[in-house]
Length: 279
View (tube, rainbow, N blue to C red):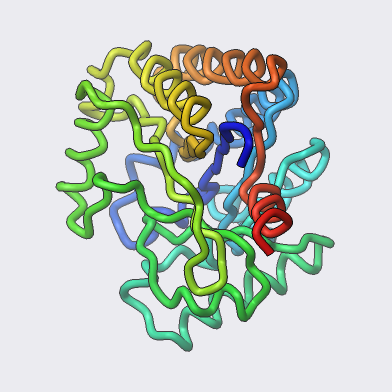
């Protein structure tokens, strides 16, 4: 890579992301997601920043709007340079399912996407729990988002505390050099754009931008990847302030792209560039 790279992946789940947990507190927030998604798309388009939308396969179907979202898929398709990727079919933790169950999740997602003329190239594991990795190449995926180095934990409360510390602490978010794992490019996450839900509301809003800026600058200096990720529902609390911080990041990315110091790529595009360079 001859430049730093900025990458965004957006885990788009509706209520499937909490199907095995108490989701009653997220119902009203989920009702806001369509407006949030539209605004994210408008900002990405305004600043010419592509993103990978990692979408639960159930959303390709039609039904209760809290669970299904074919209209969301069609909205994303209207915008240039946005990639639709896979976030499994029904959002099980891959660490808790068999290989055959994982294969069924992938097959159903591919089938639903194909019906809308979409080829899935990028994969994000539910809750970032990587397992059955060898299936991705078999089904034509070229990239996946690996867990954040030094942050990820199988224990939810530990993972939460590490995410908060990574934002509040003095360190710069990790930047990464993608590498092939089981013949698929691993593009690890660098920073979760933490929501303002619950105790997180006490995190200073501006800190998200300054952490991201530090990560982007380091990616430029070292010609590596800064990978930001979040869920649309993360913007349901303190919505205006959250969007202000996201917009500040996108403005900064555009400035660096225009200065030819940074490339902004989807996960799929990054995998394509990697394969051209190293194959």
